[in-house]
Image (cartoon, rainbow, N blue to C red):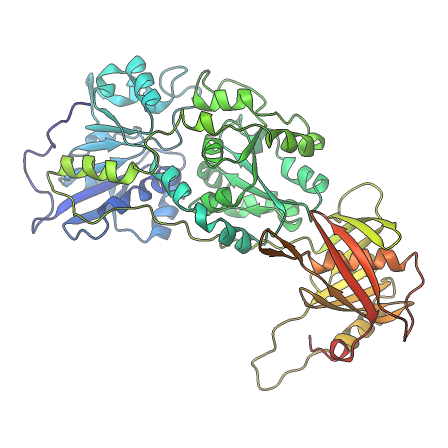
Length: 564
């Protein structure tokens, strides 16, 4: 790489010996990439960081909102043009960043250069490799192209040799943040309520060839086909889709899937935490799947082809090797096949210098500012746990198979078609129509009210009352704790259920007690209910990925008077 002298002729753009760093943002996605770089300046009072919104993008509204959420200091574009800067950081070559003074550093705004946008710049080239965007007056305007792998430098050399002369391989700071957060995987899964289920993440890029644009019904289809107690489904969308659709309309469009348990990951940080928590990814041609491969996750391709994916790119090679998904009905087979394909070697063709991006970037950026970096080490900030807490469906269509004292249940959203054993609904979350038509009603015990005046049902009182209120249900269950349930069956009367957790590899795994109650209900439908004084009945319940034992006995007094 050619180490160029920092621009600005020695003029300090900020007073008092400070260096003025300007972060030039064109989209929310670019902002998120740049925020992952900024820890290089942590603890250095000599550096003042300001942001500006580069005009001209159709996604500017979401970018401005993202800047506001980040709590950063923003300069108007005209003011940013007038001011001198000691360093300019940007993750997009579009929108005339070359008009800003000072040494300019250009980073990719994704995992490499894998797709091109039709009608934008030079044909068949992504903007990060396109001389149309990288040159001004025939000369490269960026002082440094901070790239993630030598393959990117080679491709830049083919398309724009003058820019490649100013390139350095520094790794990918977003990948390093993901890798550094792997120790928090269980924390992320706990925040998502994943439990022992397989977390499958759908990833969709933006544009007309994206998964969500071409197959908008896929999330709902998968939720109707993958048993709720074996799989959890999440969706990671490109920030540009949030900007194009808007959060309100996006929630409306995805409303049925969200009510069926879909996790919609936030576009900053949360998507990355969800990816760390994931077991498998179903992807279009967006580069998020390269991060999944680097994490060792199973990858299934769901790209239907088109003109955007660049042949020979890391993402094209990944999709060529990953099992494909042509129909939602094949998802379980595709996921099993993906588990047998290790694609981490392909990730190494997209990400070099893993774990070193921030130290390498700090060296380069401080050199451009003419400043010695602090001696303290620099490391990625751990990803915070997801804050989007999904709710499972408020009503389930339950399939059950009873064989002696063993019951297997599979639960699906209540809109699922096909034969089912019964409908189970949560009180009061489910709508009244489902509460009336369900065979099983359940509710969770709530923490006691701190108010000086309060009223609460006992478990016995509520189960009796709700069966009177809704004559259709045959079983009502109060979920007192994850392991303890008071249920009232229309024929067997009040019963206590004790659910044994599973123990595996030093961990305690618990099934959803609502699923266990559906298994008990199915067993009671074909067996004589235990009468007072009979010995307890022990059942084995298969619920998705867990097999648990439940002990059923006449109601315990402590359960009957338990306050809900």
